[in-house]
Length: 309
Image (cartoon, rainbow, N blue to C red):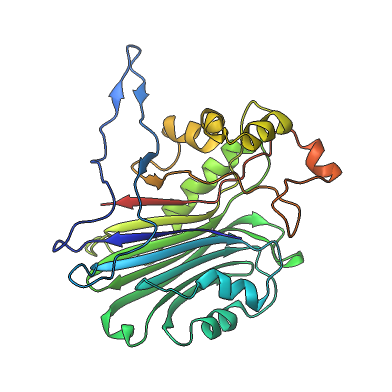
């Protein structure tokens, strides 16, 4: 299904569960070329501790899921879970079917959470849920969207991003759910789309005197792939639980190290196996003729990136 993580955001009274580092200044090599550290890895707790005396200031559960045009209510129930130890639930969806996903999410969360905000652009959707009566803690809410092409209304698989800005319990947050262009060779196109989205979302009513978001979180189907290794050698490493050896082939990390994307951002540890591309309804990698023919599409990154300001 989707990828998820729980994060604890501190307001100053407690400690954050992120292991933040200060954004490094670019250093220069002997030829005067800037060297970038790329996306840094941070430790993120799998849960938030709500035991007596250790209640977190704000616990957020973040989910990103490419639905591939299919969903059932049972899928949604599994998505939101039963042990909901979080204040905010942020759900970013790509390739959403024509079902009323908002209605399904509301029904699954009826007993514990309410919808605080949603941003949709055809098959690209983003939802923020909070506990009942949490509207009392919401001081600001803005939504925006930015399209970067795709087939649009023809098959409803829109590319681009949708965003939600929210001030909750005094913490100013910005969530951006994206779906970037596919295929191994389109690295520069994905880089360009990332930059356009970053510069365009919420720019229409930009106020130079407004306070910026304290935390910016990107999630979605980013579509960066493995570079320089064929499908079956990559699958053999994954089957042997050696997927860590593929990190150096990750286009996203390569581009971040070049300073092209996600400058100053952090991501959680990649502790799971690549999720692209399974046979439908299984955990077996694509056995179709198409899957065999595409040599480098062994990893489709759908993960969560956080910038703390």
